[in-house]
Amino acid sequence: MRGSGVRTRRGWTTVTRDLLRRRGFDIVRFSRMQAIRHLEIDFVLDVGANTGQFASQIRRLGYDGTIVSFEPLSNALRVISQIAARDEKWTIQPYALGDVEQHLDIHVTRNLVSSSILEQGELLSRIDPGSTPVDTERILVRRLDSVYPDLVPRGARTLLKIDTQGYERQVLLGAGEWLETIAAVHLEVSLVELYGGEFLLSEALEFLESRGFRVLTMEPSLPDPVTGQLLQVDLTLDRRS
Image 1 (spheres, rainbow, N blue to C red):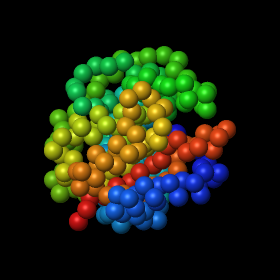
Image 2: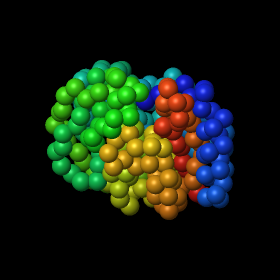
Image 3: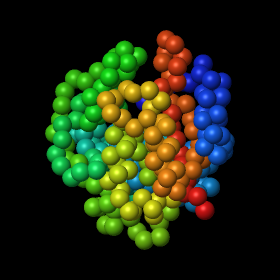
């Protein structure tokens, strides 16, 4: 999900800098691609790929390393598979990632990008009618640690990108000990609950900081169009040296 964030930038800067400084670090003003170059990323795990928006963007901006995208929704999978077929360094895995290997129902939304395993709250439906669920689909969920050794070559500088509409906690837990080998994590995270039981910003920071990561970039992602309240941010965290 993306919004302009223009009306909330001053408030966002104040709140997030205060929050991070209390935790002992500050925001480095890097763009997403600057971070990828700075961290010498050569392998991207694109979790919650949808129709390939993130992967296509970093390709356009100059990233030429390997991308492995995970997308379980049949309609989105059809689109991203066609796009990735033209790129020899981009492969698709047709399943979701979580903390338990199982089959689950995912709530499919009109706009596809808001689809989630979790139940959607009233706030998101109010600010974005396109996010209203219109169907459910049975999908396969796997743990990242069960597939990581077969997908990621030893010594890779890996970015784990997660955009799973509230399911980020489960993806990270499913990485198990392999999370220690990941150079950076990029995820969309909410400041207020948009999906039932989702990972909120303060929880995400605590979880990732405890596992050796620090904030590198934080970008406003979704504001409330009526109140201007910032609802989501995009975080990039790198592993401390």
